[in-house]
Image (cartoon, rainbow, N blue to C red; front, side, top):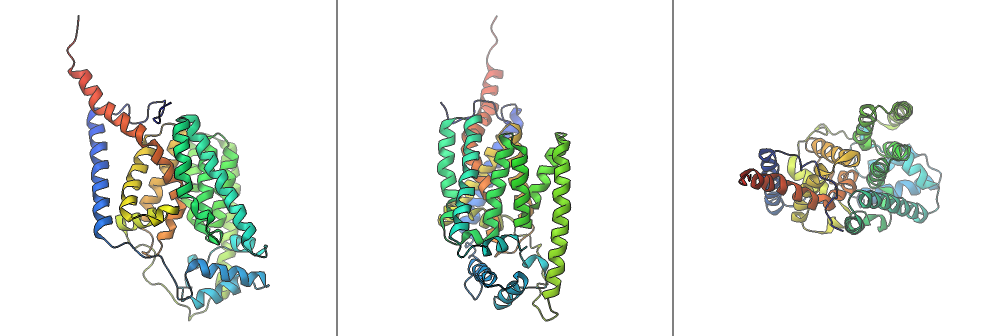
Length: 363
């Protein structure tokens, strides 16, 4: 049993010039990212004066356990941390904090988060097992342990980006295994947990429309209507707790961080966060190559997800928002085990065809 996919990838049918361009582009991107990783200092994680976002959300949930309203608790903590509260997007939607506040400690929510992570990893490994083989599935299990290992870190369940990223991986894997309503439910929950899941939701809706799954489209219409009402209510509640003297961020969210910011977000990938940035400079383009080569619906969905977030975060996001990468890095990591397939078929498209064309004909 080989690590390469039994079926030909999207690269197998490429004409020789296109294969040469694809391979040259991959090499140039890797070299460019390596140069950036080795020459530009890695951005430090965002931290407020009170110990960082994770500690802040932990204190917020604790306030809610003692009976304080979410928005009152959020205002207190955001103000103490000197956050720009004039933007509604600096106020997280309340679903996840409310859920966490139902438990006396974060222990059981953390256990549930670990189980959800195991389910997402298990489905992704089953998908790769079905379409590639057991060796690739075993390697993916190791990669997923590294990429999703943050579920073992206490209190990470309070970070909505981690939860949303796991749910997106769960959704994409469920769709690939032909469990569309499990995929829809996980994607919808990711959206309600963190609005940054919206690009993935739009991809799911687009694919359902293109494949004429009208029942799924109807379900998505109901989800979007419910979310619109939820976010409008959230905006109204935020406005009730804002004041004219609150800090405002006049620079906006569009900062065009480009490749350095993409490296920082891609490094926010479980235990890969502990490795040097040049490791991410290799992992990111190779993962893209693997997912782009994957034929069929599962590969298309994951490739679209990764490329959409990379395009978005190349323009949107501040330098201290590198933790946004937790939204897409679980999906990105799946692409690593498809790299041998991608390279095999690029090689065949580039050289085997050329050798066949140059071989003398026999009578």
